[in-house]
Length: 255
Image (cartoon, rainbow, N blue to C red; front, side):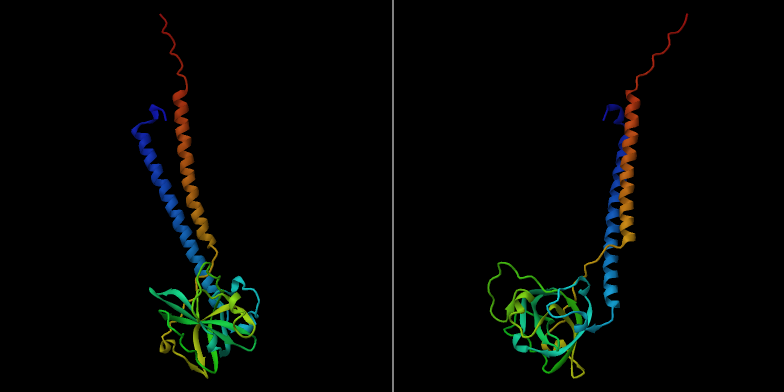
């Protein structure tokens, strides 16, 4: 920048430009965050608006997990295979470290992994599930990938809900979903999970698309910032060209 441009007026304009660009950037990021939050809320609302259906009407054993299964509300009826339930260790809930209790529920169509709840610590044996016919209400989620490099754990502990491994261990045809229980009832009587030391595990956050309106606002703020930079550069260039323009010589005074 030439010496002619280093003046208090231009320094002030540079500071104003910095403030405008920073404000536009931050406002755009804020609108992008709003777009993500609204998109997530819309996805949750859309999943909650679907009617609760029997598991067998939503998917079949061994079928692929579809994106729209996440947080889908279902009902499943069957009997728990208590001898085959597992403890998924190293989990956290509300600041506590513990384990997930996952039990196979044998239905008329196949077996589904039911995440019955969270238990503090790592008990030697998971809490016993209810006997007899049980009705489970909950939401669907995907299985987990195995943890690479994890050492062998004593039974019935696991590092993950690895359905690809459980399909060879559990009886029946296995559903490729995990049912996160929100309630259980036996013979029409609701079961209290706290009675066995369990806390229900909330469903995971849904993958969501951006809310288009707020995403457009974010782009608009960033466009304002770029426009301010472009205008400043245009003014600087005009000033620089004006300084380089040769000054016409004054006409000599006539005698």
